Length: 178
Image (cartoon, rainbow, N blue to C red; front, side, top):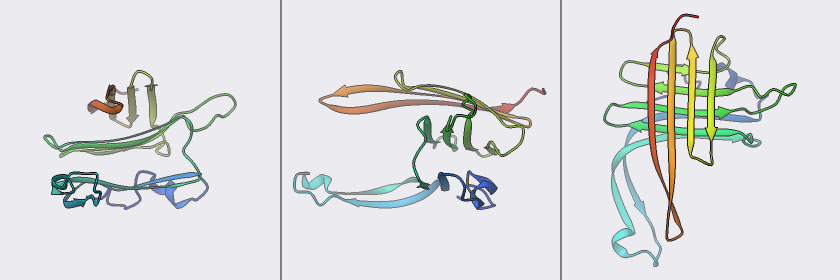
C-alpha cells in the first residue's frame, strides 16, 4: 500500500526540490508480509536462531545531512481497526528567535487518507513534547479536518534491559470553521 497515489510520499511536491537537508519517503504504512529471520549466533539457543511468520511491515527511507535537534518520528498501526499513522517533524530551525513547527503527518483508515504538511497552505500544528516523561501530543488542522494525537512511552528497566510500553490515541474529526 503506497503512501498515496501520487507516489511523492509525505513531503509531497517539496520532495522534488533538493534544497532541504533532510528527506523522508514512506513507501508503505502497512504491507502484508511473510518473513523468516535467521540469527547465526552460537550464543543464541538453537530454537531461537530461526523464526518465521506473517505480519505487517512499514517501509521508509530517510536521507540527508542530519536530523534536526528537536525531532520526533512515530509510526503506528492498529491491526484491529486498520488505522495507520506516520509522522516526522518538530521545530527544525529558528527564524528571528522563533521556532516554527513543521510536521509531515499521514493518517490512513478505511474511510480516510489525510495528509498534513506545512506546504499545504492553511495547515496548522500544535505539539507538546516531554521526552523525559515520555509524553507527546500533536494537533494538526487542515481545511475541515482536525487530527488529535496523544502518545506515551513508559520506560521500565529490568536487568539493564530497557522496554518501552506505548499507548497511542488518535482522533480525526471535522474541524470547526474558523
